Image (tube, rainbow, N blue to C red; front, top):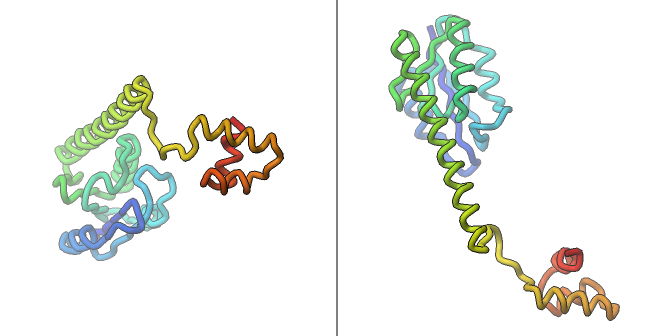
Amino acid sequence: MAVIGYARVSTAEQNLELQTAALKDAGAIRIYADKGVSGSAVERPELTKLLDRLDEGDVLTVWKLDRLGRNTRHVLTVVDELRNRGVSFRSLTEGLDTTGPMGTAMLTIMAAFAQLERDTIIERTRAGLKEAAKNNRHGGRPRKVDGAAAVRAADLKAKGLSANDIGKMLGVSRATVYRYLAS
């Protein structure tokens, strides 16, 4: 039986040290780590390598359940595949351990709540964007050229000026001029 760790951070700027230290303290003899890879990403090269190399009796250990994946279906599928191969799963932060039936049941419940939380955040974000749109507020960068400037750009273009010259006059890039001329 070997304890094998898996760590993941979503961006290259994030640090793996907290996770790897906890995995070493839990007895991990080998740690695979994906850096700059979202939990919802289909391709996680180090996780794929790890899953291919696990043997019966091994324990896949993660610092936190969402490191394995954010999608409930994916997490449960991976854990079910592990169980079918005789591999256990342990999540340190949540205290989950699938060596017994209670750990498996708790994992299913925790994964469902993680998915519920993610779905709720998405639902609230969409509702907020919809409400903002009703009040004529839209996300994204503020426009550099307002309606009057767009009309002026069209007039200058009709007089034969180049997009570069129009951009210099309005204080915007040539690409911005083309975007406003197209609309």
